[in-house]
Structures are given as structure tokens and as C-alpha cells.
Image 1 (cartoon, rainbow, N blue to C red):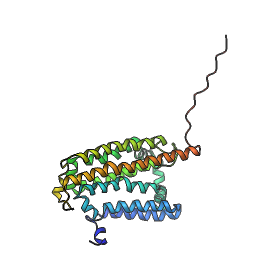
Image 2 (image 1 turned 60 degrees about the horizontal axis):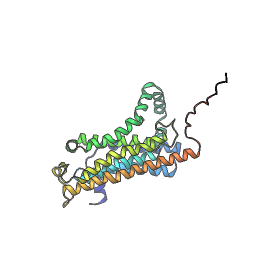
Image 3 (image 1 turned 135 degrees about the horizontal axis):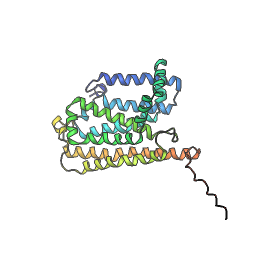
Image 4 (image 1 turned 90 degrees about the horizontal axis):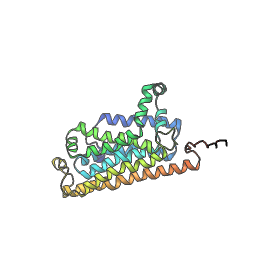
Length: 284
């Protein structure tokens, strides 16, 4: 199989292709205005390429037929791709790529109550962290996994949901600003990866040590790698979820610690309110 065979989409999606092309056009237009540095541009392209390769190439065929490749695909969709993408801080660049009329309409909408409420929901620390974990674990339920692999609509919903939740989550964790204006405090950015990694690691460990096939759907679809039985496939997939996904979240924790140290060195951390000094009562 040559390179073009690998890059050919297993299931062509014009909506997905149009989405990627739109993001690319907006970023190329916007970087003429904001001029992000080379590191940020590299992060953006790496993240976008990782997401595209995971969603719209021959890899998708193997992800539907091998559990460990499916988990590797979701490691990219949920962790690595959004991590690189949001590490590029592309928001202002993409906004600058919009036509002037659209930028004005977007700015006007964000000032309205509906726009402010939408922003508040999409950046709510508790809701975003909950969705980040929930939208991984719910698709891991054997019954849910069974039907999502058979129905192409559920399958695409599964993949897009983990991508969007990953983007929302890493947007909060990688924020380099103090709070406010950042929605999540610096301490919350340190604590959140610890909270979100624990349930994922527990589920990954359970899958790894289970000695029977939890996901017979991959046998039903026909395993793509001959000679690998269901339990071995399952062990590798569980280890990806247990160890590799945990390592990515440890990186998020260390990055947040670095943000804390940098803001502290620049005296940009919010000061805790001080109690007023007690004035002694005059002697009678």
C-alpha cells in the first residue's frame, strides 16, 4: 500500500473536508494580520494535520477494526490534536481571517446577552471538564461502542464530540493569563488534569486487566491485523488509555505549573483579600 492509498479517505465526508479547508483559509488570511511566531504556527499545523489524518484517511478503516488503533485514534482526537491546536492560541488569528463584515457581526453578537451566555457555557470550568471526561467514558461502554461502530452517524458524532470537548478543555488549561480574564484560576488549571485523568486511568486499567472480550464488535467487523486475538488487542488499547492519555494530562499539569511560576515571577497573580486590621478598643 503506497502513501496515496493511506491518505485516501476510508469514508469521504464533504462536510469534514469543507470544515478543514475553511479553517486553513481563515488561518492563512489571519496570520497576515496577527503574525503568530513560528512555534505557534507549527503547533497549529501539527494539530490540524493530526486531526485530519485521524478522521479522514485510511487510518479510520483500521480504527473500526482494531480496538487499540481505535484508542490511539481517540488519543489524537481528544488529547494530542486539540493540545497542539490550542497551544497555538489560534483564536485571534482565525477571527482576523474573517471578512470585515463578519468580524463586526461577531463582535456585536458577543456583546449581546446571547453571545455572553454562549461564551460562558463554552468556557464554564466545571461543565467543560465534565464533558471532557464524560464524552470519552460514555463511548467506552460496550453497548454504546457496539452501536456507534455500526451506525456511521453515531460513529461521526463520537469522533466529533471528543474533538470538540478536547478543544474546549485544552483552551482552558493552556490559558497563560491570570484569572480574571481567564475563566479558570491558575490553581484550577493545575488541579483539573489530576481530576480528569483519574477516571480515564481507572477505566484504562480495568480494560487492560479484563481477561475476556469486552468489545466483540471488532470481531464482528473483522479484525484488520491477522493473528492478534481480542484480549491482546484489548490490553494494548487499555494501556493507551491508561498510560499514554495519562502522560498527556500530566503534561497539562506541568504546563499549568509553569504558568503559575511565570505569573508569580511577574507579580500578576491575583492577591488574596486581606482582612482589615483590628483596631483595639479604647480603654474605659
